[in-house]
Image (cartoon, rainbow, N blue to C red; front, side, top):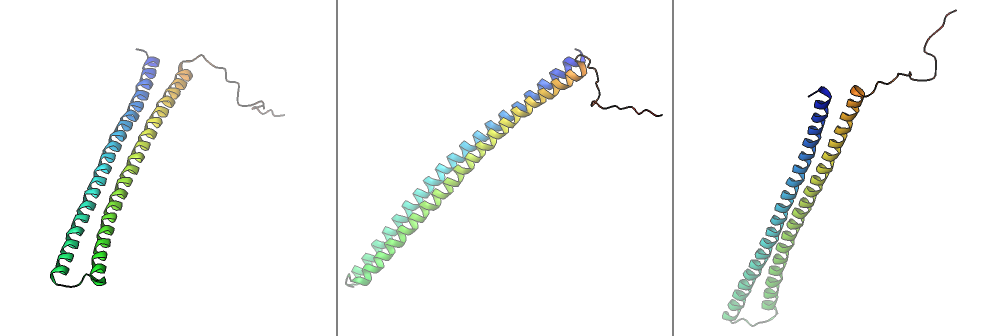
Length: 165
């Protein structure tokens, strides 16, 4: 194989390797994004379970407060109703806070997944551009080394010699 052919083959292999690296980066970003989205779903599901548990605990506390109030013979007046109402409101607030926190974590993970996809697409496009530019540079080198000879016409229309006397 002559030098010119080896140079062109080398440029082709280099371009292919760059593009292959971009494809690998794209595949890895898709895999990572899918894992983050699964994790986001799990986070939201865990938050839903936690909120349900918080509501169940609130119901137990409310039931106990009603039972203690009834067993003590205290009238079901405003103070008992206020306490029961406050317990219920606090329990619901905590359940909603659990849901919000889980939703926020899930949204953050989905945003990270989208960022990973974006980075993968950019790496892929960049690898294609690098590969094509490498081929173009190689073709230019080949032409300058093995192309037809060119006549050097100088760098401008002015004279480059000096005459004395």
